[in-house]
Length: 298
Ligand code: CUA
Image (cartoon, rainbow, N blue to C red; front, side, top):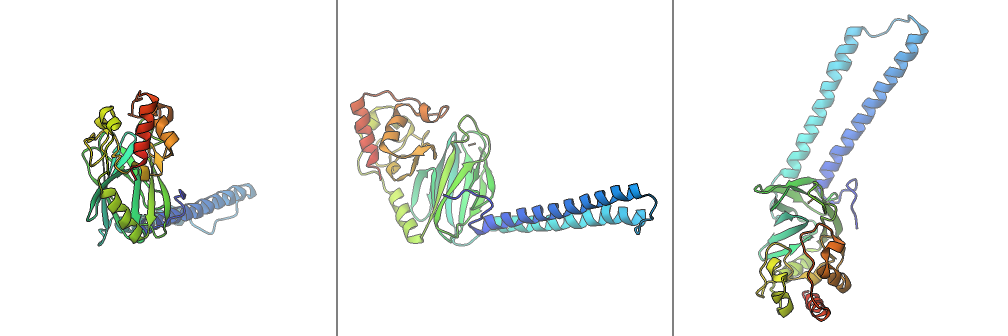
């Protein structure tokens, strides 16, 4: 899995990376020139009164006004150009909405079929994706370093982010705005796959669950979670209709295995202290039945 912001895998990340390297290069050149001038001046001082080839005024006007103006002009131009490129509207974009919660991400697809999932963003390779970002509680920041820049999710406000992956793969994303105890474990996975695989995935996500579970619906689970097609319709926690198809639990906190799922339900606070999921006391037979049911939610 790739997480390096210095290796862009899409055009938006590439514009930002290009700007970063331009700034690093110009900063390095200016530093070397300034330090060289300083060293030369120190040694000239010791040798005594050899006259300078520059007049003081030419040096001040050139080095203090003309050069900084040029440097700032180049950087401003490059910044505005990169910003325009990463915010320009695109045709044929996949539209989705991501909502930040303490400490996970709800993902809504507005493709021809509508689907809801959590913490995993599937996208088709080579196609632009427009993401509307907001939050239900505090400020978070949605950041997939290799695919795009960082955009805040703010309650009551809708921000827009464009991204595109040029190569199939799994890209790790991270909440990049401190939002509470489990800020670190507020991660997400972006899975870029061929269009046909994406279409199949999103159709699966749009389907309701084949069956319900008495344990899920009668325990407190249904108060916070939705399983579409059953009477469980809570909205405080992630939609679990296709939980078994996800790779991780708790927003990339632990691999999605039956064992971890049982531990998570028993006491999520062991995995993610401070998360909003309370311990759910139930007898072992009920827990086994519940985990077996959740495992069927492909
Ligand atoms: Cu959400 Cu940090």
